[in-house]
Length: 424
Image 1 (cartoon, one colour):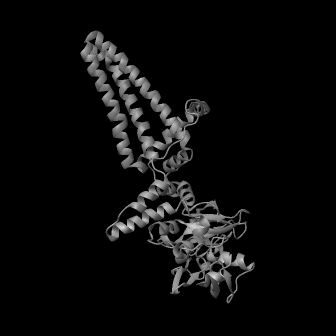
Image 2 (image 1 turned 180 degrees about the vertical axis):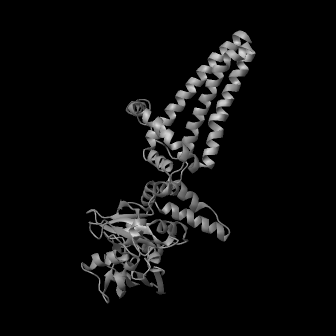
Image 3 (image 1 turned 90 degrees about the vertical axis):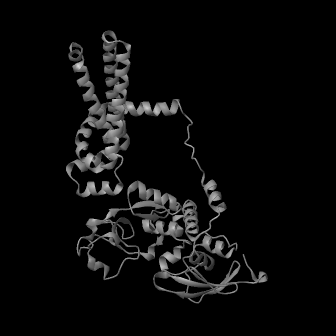
């Protein structure tokens, strides 16, 4: 009894430290398990605690450093007390009692401060983040003066201990491409999966200016925007694009996801807009998708070397690319097949068809061009805007512009020229 009374303060302090350690472990798991959709809802319409949680996640490196620092400090204090109690037990009860107590103490902190809190936090991240954000903000603020020192130690350790450390991927893209091409698929479901994998790998090889919706394919509105501004027409992309209030009408600043709104209000549509990200014209579709994920934006605006918006790419466009058996930008924009055979060595081609796709499908080498589409290549070839009825020779083809529809859509008739007629 005397021994229990002597150890009671130490055991109480150990229990408090286990509770603190569990708090930090649960906070880390809960906050970093929040999906970007949850974060957006918490930021826009959440409680005060939820807004505090999103504010903490705006600087994840600072948050994680603070949580790990306090958790490490708590664990060091805990095991120091375990050592003190173990020594007292060894003096009074023997080595067996001390060993048993140390083992029980270690299992207790593993289960009660790591496994159990993190399991609960992953299941209910938003609920726990709501209640833990404010006290966690306090401890992060307390460690603020030490944060430059911790960041410097982290930087020096990476520079001195692993100065040339480069994370090595488990598989290269080329390895995945070879694995997909060599796989033998039997049923239709397997062939569809094969096509999806092939299209996903294609994202890192296709530029955004090949897949974007060009400037002529969407309309942007200066706020305030009302439903009547659409004049009863549905936006082709499913998004209402909004510019800066006092900026150029070509500069896209935000997008309203009309396709997922349960009810579209008649006025002030720009209040429901989400910011867009920006990528250069030479970026890949994989880069654009990464921007969408990093900035939680369903739309990226594509800009040229002068900073002008020349097109947009939506999240749905990328998904269409990945999960369509034979993805086609022109089919996505015009709802038609891009290349329609009219006879032997004779095709009808949409102007927005990419030169890459035309070359792959027809297995022909095309003349070099600064443009990436058939319409752009013909415009470079003619050195002027394309007009309906234009005819001529382009690489291995004789071409005739069959039709120019609204907003610059054109359809070109291509016929394979005889070898003697082919021109560079």
